[in-house]
Image (tube, rainbow, N blue to C red; front, side, top):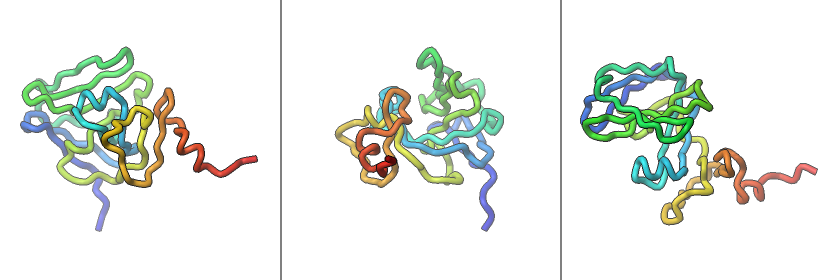
Length: 152
């Protein structure tokens, strides 16, 4: 079996369709409050590709961009409201795409929980993936630090 070299996705109504060229740069569960509010969920599973690896197949006129912070923007379908892409000037080398809008699997499974310090207390994941947090969202949490071996 050959590994897929691309994966397609779409919004809920199908107006915006796109293809992401693989390999992806990573796949994470994000627990930040912006993701929670934007998706109405406890966390969002994102995967990332370089901007040049994302191709809009249709619906460019239906894609709306919202400046969600001074550094970031989120793009969504103006017809159905599906959240599709997230970019950040601090990481111009990637575009984040919600895994749930893909038509099938990508080249990897989620690798880590980020911004875990702001996770919803009513939805604690039971997997064994690392949980990162802190100000950047990718620092070891107190629980992760406890499980690290002593380096003295």
